[in-house]
Image: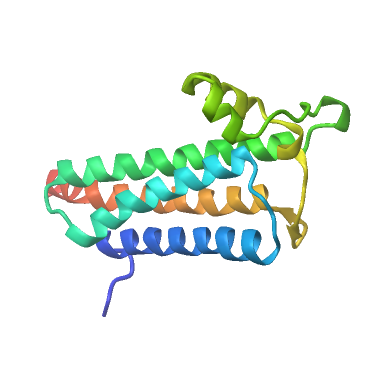
Length: 175
């Protein structure tokens, strides 16, 4: 019987979740609903794509050396960890009282053209009024809340992948 939690199958699952997440964002939210992503949404997408890129490499090549698997896992974990942290910040901004929400500033394009990259990161994470706006909900959850749930599930998948990587060592030590 096909085992669903093999290293390669878990990597394929991560790639599939990246494709689904990005398709939902680009085709449904942006094209169908006409929503424009705020800077924090864009940063979440970048993290998801980084995770998907490392997962795709791992799924395609299915490396056998543990060091290579760990390196790919760390890259993937960094991407989804980044996306999760940004989504958590975004949810926090959306739950601030109206009088504590930061004022809207210039767009991300302007910041990228005029500010050093470190300052752009600082400005994005400070948030803006546009990041605190809830434009669409599904089952009472805003887009960043839905993203945070998805990213948390993907972090759990990363724990499973780590277990797949280190399990042979644990089995050899117990034997």
